[in-house]
Image 1 (cartoon, one colour):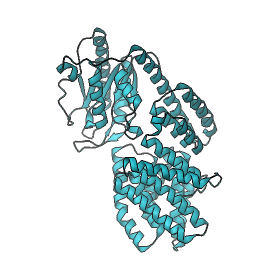
Image 2 (image 1 turned 45 degrees about the vertical axis):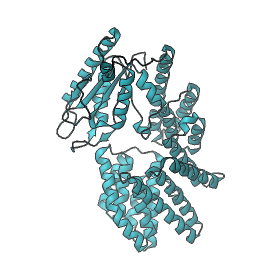
Image 3 (image 1 turned 90 degrees about the vertical axis):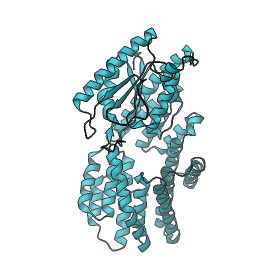
Image 4 (image 1 turned 60 degrees about the vertical axis):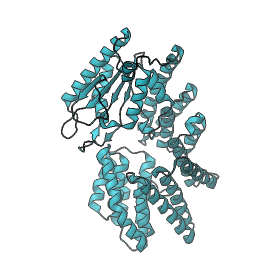
Length: 476
């Protein structure tokens, strides 16, 4: 990154529902094809808000960017709550240098007459055409160039608060704090870029060792940076997850500043890591790891209430215990653990019907349980889970988990043709190794349970082998 002015972009990620009822809007396309290049054309460095990727957390670095970035662009389309909250903070702190944009013919939460605003056009199906992207890019560059000159002369105020309350004069941050912030954010953005490269490398077996070496170098840089950017620390944890280095995930957590370690998304990640270590027969003190994972999840639920992710992670703990106990021949305890896992996954799905992750695990384990009652419950939930995953695919970019869930649902429906289509989707993507193993293990659980009931699962065994032949069996 250079010494160009920083321009903070406040907008949703991925595909989001149209409040007017139309097709989903792809905000990544709006950013990548129009706003990002427009900001760069104006001689500025774009920085995109990342709190949505962190579970909606508005963290310290976010406030610093809102207060100290030289310029800001906010997309008001869909009236995203985080965007509106952040825009309010920006308008309270900065009298000028903020540009708002929005898609024409979409409902807005307030009158934008007092704002410096640029409309852009989407098609009837909410696509951003090449012509519209070019126009928004050009107009963004023009507005920001003009704002830069007006800011230099301290002319024109685009904050309604400063316009209407002439006596409003908030205390400005000291110059040394602003300078320090700019240095930190440039370091943080560079680290995030390096971590994104590592995660892409980790998706390939050929690049795994190179990715590990590169990640250790980035980790050392993070240690030496004194950064408190939650996005950097979380990306570092996720990069180690991509390499299936569960111990390093916990090590990064232990190195984080204390206030970052309290964030729910971070604690969920470290609970995930403790449980994955507990699933490895070679890990010492496995039961202590499992107890730590459950303790973290229990603490989260006490503080934040039930959530689909917390229940889903707890379900995974019981599911792994069930697999181990069944393998040891303790059928009575194994069934009890399987029922506990099902209960947690169902609770997770009930906590948020939009989250298909606990839902698909619930229906899979209900099928594995195989009682008349569990199979009836599975059949009740299957269409709801299918609806949830298709809604997610409709409103956001379809990732590996969408394709993997479609595959699992097709198997549960005994639909080889749909399973083949979903398998092709899975193989066309670049999932991380642990993701492929998770899918393969779930399908193996279904296959073993059905084979024990006398069902021919030859086609399923073949399909699992084609999902990724080198994926060995895990705990399920």
